[in-house]
Length: 328
Image (cartoon, rainbow, N blue to C red):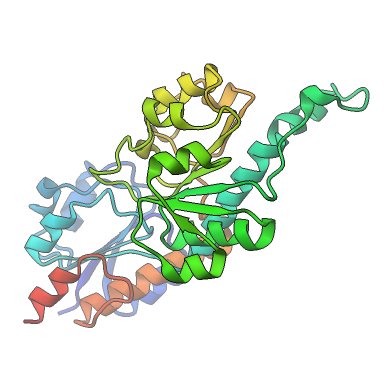
């Protein structure tokens, strides 16, 4: 019997062809939600699922009795009920490693552009307002030598810290992570409590995954602990930050500026003041958005689902317990 895959989003013809050589593929190029009746019909017969951007619920899984594995084209997996998938013996695969450096580039881009006011001043030039040499009112802040505080020091956090420490001579503090002795030795990083990190850092960068424990991890109290000159960067998930508290902190001058690639609501609500604030750099969730990296992410997902449906261990497996239970 040929196994069936439901695929949606971010797949090139070459990826689909690779899958079709092994499986029957129902492909949905544009799928905004899971209510599509054709999608539901395909899911009812599917053994595998490949895609990103859709929220998968236990109720939806009830309609997929044959499902063996899901390959998300992302590192984050907050759209998936991991415990429920594990209970059902469904493997969940993701795409770490292949996007680490690209996402870290984006994180450091936010640090640089927010510090040097690059977006604001580029618009200043476009408007034709550059009529004379700029004065102090348009000065930015140095990055080199400043203290970089990393809330989270996983793959992406470590890559950002490496850029700061080795490229810009930045002392690195980190919190909300297990001890990283190798990184401490390599980068001179210091592990500390988050309150200390917030009080001492010139740049505070968040890279923790979204979970029940990290939702609104950064709120009004945390912003009050930061320096008035601090620049806050979020390249994790929007809901890690209380966005209303961030807006208030920026408006009241509790922090100096922010660089944001993620938001509580995406796409960003037209009512949000964030993109209109001169001290905010707001990007449309472009962390891994390069041709090379998105292609590598899709390829990793194709490889993951192919291995999983052939009974082999995927390259990047989130719920190890599901694999162990299946092979006891």
